[in-house]
Length: 249
Length: 335
Image (cartoon, each protein chain N blue to C red):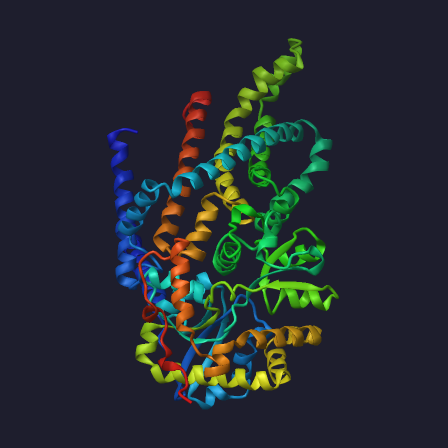
């Protein structure tokens, strides 16, 4: 990011903080309802410095990464099958849409019951929530491959593998990575929901502690800030991978 | 120019919304009566029968109050009472201590549950008879926070155990009662007037472990915001008095409370016997040695003092607080 680009981003952030403070001043919100930005920043630094935040953030990050990798891998495979087989599409589509329409909040406690131990339920919930956007993006991407190119490949007697590696994947990659941009932010939501369904550690657990045991609203906001930063960080990682693989779009 | 006008309009709308949302709605006279919004527990229940009875029989109205009820959990209710958006709440004493230590301006003004209602229960066939028997057992709990988590730590601590000595199974959908019934866990946290009662109605012998023998944690009671207490002491006093009056009447005649609860929440009438059993169990936990001496609503100062110390050991008290910071018994009837 150049300095020229950074200035409006910085200004927008300052404006956001000013608006936040103004809402507190005008609305007369006490800190336990809406803490001022300075109090949240102070609690954020304190929570990281005294080691409160670290184990929870590490636990959540582990769940997000594991869930995203599993979910994305399955989604790409499923998306390819959906794109290349009308039969598969007809059979799977209703279930995919139904699964997407079912609130993950309602499913999470059930999944936590079925997979009670350790990381499994969190990974399953994250994988479920990232699956649909990446599968659909993959399907759309694979179907967008130029029919003329596919015809050319066949006329040159290209093998199935050659068509897949040299035509389909490069053509579908921008779409797949677009789906992953959406998926990785949803994985953050999935991890928090999974932790609310039962966990010893994680930022979802810290939210419950801050809200339900400590009544520490600045800590609640500091935790939300950490979650947001993780989401933004992972999104940036996907964008960087995307730029490396398919260039700037 | 148009773009600038839109930005200005957006700012104005935001400020107006903030103003509208930010103001705590102070009790306002309604046809000569003081309007009070009262926050009860998570869902409408027969456990709130005194409030329903006092409302149905016109006790609040005759005392100059116009009362409406809302249902909320402690983490939502306590800040709203502190803000003044809700004037009176029914909240757990163990929530009041950390909340006040965080600067939320509330006071606990009357005890409703004089015996701490959060308990650990198990089937009698589990062999569990005391806290020491919980070692190595699988225990269901809604989550690692709130009153049940505090109570469990106190109970385990009395047997020199910690939560690391048991296998915790979380049921955020409050399904831990069913988990005990199905044998998915050995024991679970619950409320003395709820899950064990339901299990017994299903014909199961149940053992209940109370925390009161270990530390007298303050149970749910009436809380008010300090601004409400200062501005409308007579309304608070009247609300407390009429609620305690209804509690006494229900203690003497549970069916009066059951009828009021069913009138307020008709769904409760689907299983009248079960609701009657829950109400009877609720009446039991309104009482303690203290309330037998001083009457319903009495506040156990020593218990509060011990609880501050206990919650401080658990790291739940951000800034030191005294009993005087937490409770106010000036609103209790003097008789």
